[in-house]
Each structure stands twice: as structure tokens, then as C-alpha cells.
Image (tube, rainbow, N blue to C red; front, side, top):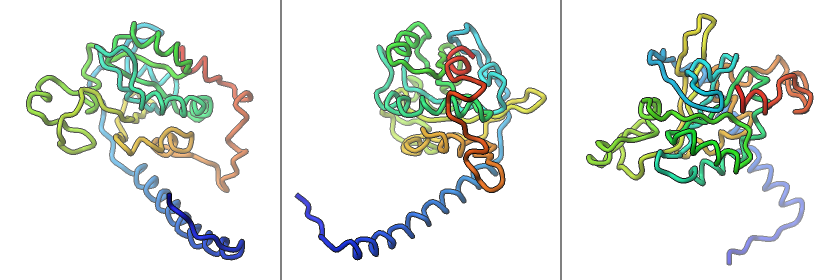
Length: 244
């Protein structure tokens, strides 16, 4: 069993201050990365993707539900799986409370899986989540955004994931992809994050930091200027996220 040095309160405060400076530097570095993330170029989405969910057939444009920014959670749930990935479920448990803040901050969050909606719906209900969840079965969406892999990938033993070629391990992998829609209705892919990069995405700040508009806080950063108690928002999470 590892033992730790025992010190006086004054010595502990001195040591804590040293670590605090490193933590502040880390936060400043994160802020700079978020700024550079918002400056990434965009890719226009040219393909017409169709999904099936609680509202029937919907396009990628429909998934925005009146907002200009869309975060897609690539939820690992293959066509022949009986339930969703435990890791993706762990993340979903943490992010579900973010929904009401996101939908009132011009961001829609939708989970997408290749499993048929007939399999997704009962698992979604079982877990008690409120985010919208749709099936991409029959479309190229998951393959185009490099989170699902083909029999050909399995045969060659390699996949393109997290922006590099790597060994094939499984037919589904996790990630988030972010899209924005302009006033003309054009959709652009702005960002994707995979693997361990998804670990800190599930909070409200984590989600906002991967969107084109970022936190979009008013000057001065007074939290009460844009955040409300979740029961005081005009748009409720259950209505906005589960039923479009």
C-alpha cells in the first residue's frame, strides 16, 4: 500500500499552491485549444442522410430541430447487438443532464447508431435517457464519419479511426461529430473527436467547447447572464430532445 508524506497545514497549502499554478496553466492551454478548434475550416455536407427515430424518417437537417449547431454522439450499437455499449452508456448517463442547457444555447444533441430503431427504442426507454436517438441503418453516415467499419476493413485488418490508420478491433467505435447549419440551410461538418478525446466532452462546458460558437458567453463571463435553473428555461429538454 502506498504511503503519503504527512505535513503541517501550512506545508500542505504551499504544496497545493504549486500544483494550482500547474492546474491554471492547464486550463489556459485548454482555452487556447478551444479557440483554435473554433478556427478550424469546415467541410460542406453534400450527401443526403436519412435516419429513423421517434418521429419517423428524418434528414440530417431535421435533427437540428431549429438550432444552428448539432452534436452527434456516435453511440456504439451495432445492427446485431442486443444492447448499447457500456462505455457509451456511461457517457450518456453523465451528459443527459446537459440537454436542457444545450437546447437553450442553440445546440442540439442527438445520438446516432447503426442498430435499427426497433432495437434502440426499448434500450433508450430502459436507460431512462432524454436525448434524441436515431438509427442510421441503411445509410453511409457512420462509415463516412469513421465510427463504423465494413467487412472489407475487417478482412484487411485496418481501419481509419481517430484520423489515422490503425488495427481493426471491432466494427463500431465511439466519437462525437459536430455540424452547423447556415441561414440558407447549408450544413457543414466542423469537428469530430474520438477515443479518449471524448472523455471530457459530456459536461455542458465540454459540449459547448466543441461547437463553432463555443461558450458564447457575454462579456465579463457572468454565469447568471446566460445560465438558468433548468426548470426556468423556455425550452424543456424532454420536449426538445426526445421528440424533436
